[in-house]
Image 1: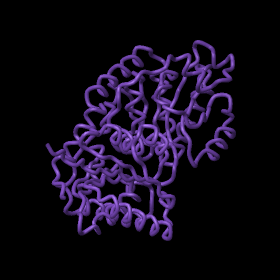
Image 2 (image 1 turned 90 degrees about the vertical axis):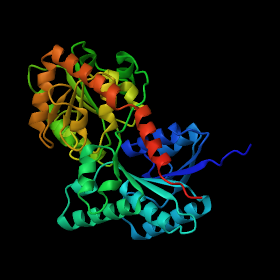
Image 3 (image 1 turned 30 degrees about the vertical axis):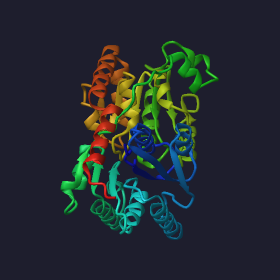
Length: 391
């Protein structure tokens, strides 16, 4: 009996760090059924994502010239590198992620006239909603429209993202909502997690009444971390809260600026940038309250993981976050770029243990019901199987 050839599935993503979009690619690439799908990932650089995929046995192809920032020469080189990969590999499905890789990948894929692949685009947010001048916003909107128009299907990770994309002409019927999902996995004990985050614990931090505020975040302007640091300052300098610390897990381009801000505010003994941690979600048990002050967001994995851990969450009401958190029932939503609101919300939870427990339990139930990795993989697989794969 003849065995049908596997469907060649190629994921494309710009950066090989391990932010939300990279985790999405990793989770899907490792969740696809190996009996029917031959999976590869094309990415820029050779960072953590590539290392994790290599360890998981997923084939990777690194393009050294592909990067987030605009660079005409390197972008042209990346385009031709992608076109060559597509021509040699002849994928049945190309699943593009992040605007740079999506734009280059969608155009290169459509130039393969003899073996036209099906193109899926996942929008992890909409970059034209960021603070930019009108010309930049118009240019980015045009790029998004071109990517969606060239794609056979567009996956939006939140209703907010779907709503924004649906405003673009002639693509509304090609957009499908599929929420990000998280897998079931154990957390470390709180004491162990705290030692891993801050090995040189002081007596003040070790105090049993110390409140651990925390977040997992790329150190990027879109993440609103200066407002969280300012909120922490208000709480820490309030005499009612003698033992409060803020731990920020993650790395990024804003580290130097955030370090300077922490020093200027006199918070060196209370606010800690602990850098990248392998499997940071395992350390969420260290925290009493999780915070996520983003200015712009899609559907963040960090909040999903915090909910899975049963933590109360204070987060900005941006992007898909209100689709995860029901305000004042499973967490507290605040306006973006508002340190005072963040501080008041944190204090409200800190003052009442029953509120903290209630929020954490409600969010945990919501995550289990609506945001599982199994559901995300199943619904994505349905997209692949419902499109016509050409020989």
